[in-house]
Length: 365
Ligand SMILES: NC(=O)C1=CN([C@@H]2O[C@H](COP(=O)(O)OP(=O)(O)OC[C@H]3O[C@@H](n4cnc5c(N)ncnc54)[C@H](O)[C@@H]3O)[C@@H](O)[C@H]2O)C=CC1
Ligand SMILES: CC(C)=CCC[C@@H](C)[C@H]1CC[C@H]2C3=C(CC[C@]12C)[C@@]1(C)CCC(=O)C[C@@H]1CC3
Image (cartoon, rainbow, N blue to C red; front, top):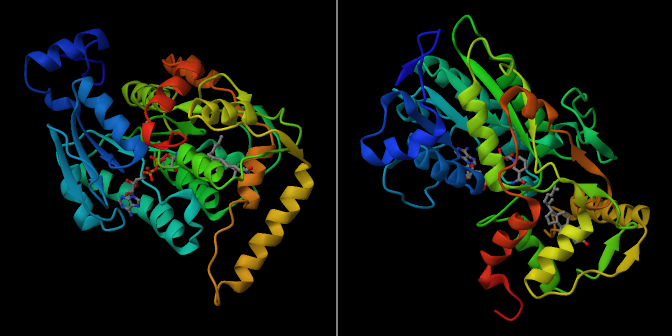
């Protein structure tokens, strides 16, 4: 173990970690907690942290797996009393919990993402945690219109496309504003985009479900819109780099960082590749963007009006149509410069690994 100029215990170089981790017990300065660690990204993060010699606790409203060496704390992050025990003797916290974007429940998003994040910050300060890494989202700047190579200095969306995005904006502002080098409480926000990979409960399952219902025949718009899809291991890598670069003198304190695959791809090419990899036909027929967006808006309004009588969830929501028919890709130059970020898995390999991980979603399975 080395000590840096702030007297903080620092990690040995990463090539030593697996050896040290395998040889002896975990170093006490590498104790961290992953809030939301039962989720898709959270679990991948937990697995990588363990591999790198960290001692990991998970705090989540549900426990979705068991892993040797991981201590689980089950509870709602809005409740400080249940959260505090999970933060004792921990120097680093990752906050990657959120209600699923598809839930469209304003009250839930506001409670968990805004009030809950306030509670997380308070609990971290109370427990003496020194570093908080938030999983934000690149969509905090997305308003449903084209973003090409967007940098972190883009303003937050004035008209966020849904409650999820609206509350992710407030959440990010809270965490970044809490950064206080004087008090040695350091924060940073990672903004991933379009995370995909093994065990993702959203992207591939929604896509396959739509295909199985015979609704994946159409391309919205001309099909040339470029989008970032980011393999989950790259997102994990960005989080760990951020945590390891978070020091009082570091330029990353209190800042947001885009983390992507750095390989924007046509939205419809990506969808087609995943579909064909799983044995489904790729969409072929084009529909005008404005027509589909207008229809989705109508359906959404209808669902809103009829909600007291019947409940139905349209596949084509305005938000999904906007995501499928516009350009939205982001520059991760700042992460490259400030923390030496570079994707560890390319897009093609990421797609192959993802497709292989869903044998049960193959056509005919
Ligand atoms: N999946 C994606 O494409 C993207 C995700 N993100 C962000 O990444 C983070 C992780 O997302 P995923 O892993 O995809 O979602 P997920 O739904 O798989 O994981 C979220 C976890 O948070 C937990 N959670 C929810 N409410 C809680 C509460 N009140 N108390 C304690 N735990 C609670 C859930 O039980 C779940 O395990 C989220 O903050 C999300 O906004 C950002 C950009 C893209
Ligand atoms: C890049 C990014 C932010 C991806 C987010 C993931 C989801 C929002 C997409 C995953 C599957 C997508 C999908 C559609 C919209 C966007 C997703 C939900 C459609 C509903 C778009 C319209 C269709 O023709 C069917 C699509 C099914 C898959």
